[in-house]
Length: 393
Image 1 (tube, helix red, strand yellow):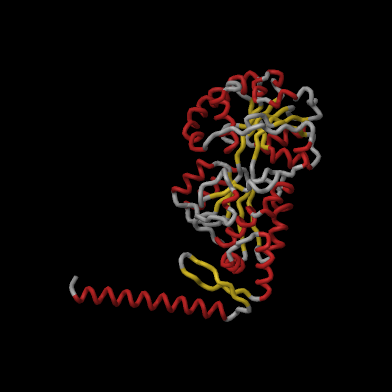
Image 2: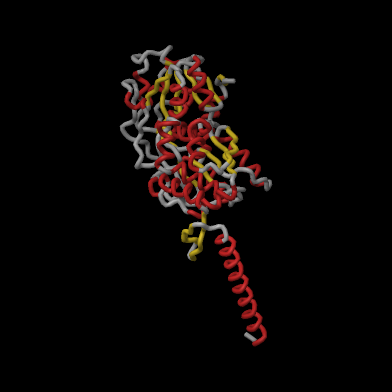
């Protein structure tokens, strides 16, 4: 290397170093100016200092009791952002989760958009690809589609402090589940007696013609629920699609919530592959619903991710931390009526003690990669039978 080029590189390095030192010093001055207390936190491989005033320190200390290890820089960043936009699924987050989150983080204003999983993903992906960055957190249940978005670079990576308590349903760094959903066979207890419903405790019931004209199922397009359910039908063969759809004269619904609402109102007597979270929601509201979850148990998760260009990334991380904390998981379980995603949080839903309730003795073993690979073939078989079926409004 010639001497002039070497000097140029050294000068450039010196400028970069000086500029970096100036920026660090400026940041330290700005943060220390308002400090009444100081906490040292690790950022990457270096150490920096985040400061909180007395009121903020008190809020942080309270939050850290519920979320041990909560990074103070996330708290401070979220406090500065002050907003959070959540694209959510249809459980009672406004009534159960949001108020408890606001108790810990009163400085966060929440904006929400509710839809089922497929429309949520369609809206987010369309916005992200067009450069409209609106959502801070997106909930979903279709791993294959979200994995593709991750490969496209549309998802931020963040590992929550409680990640080690989550053993299934996650993609390392990209998304983590906040619940555990069981697929069950449900019935309207005003129309079907417990004795008549006894057979619903087996997956063979989905081919039982006694429910002809009285049963509802979901269309193939209805998210991760149907991908798992109909892959199970195709692989394990408790019945075939012709019997499930055509011979039983099943009514096909566009979403699980719509199907369960129709079941609760008496429009159908039985629903196959019903999401137990939606069932709990309506039963607590007084709907005449009961259900059995056969062996092997078909379990999947609702999960959430942070978009790569989320407008309020620290508020998004704060939300994820709260939802996966023990406090958040207890609210998900006892408040929303969903199974907890964490292995160290017990399922305390009252329904689990009812005489009519049946939980699976073991769970079905599968991987979403396998489901995704076989989905085109399953859909072809489904479509061949569904073309002859009745569609619900």
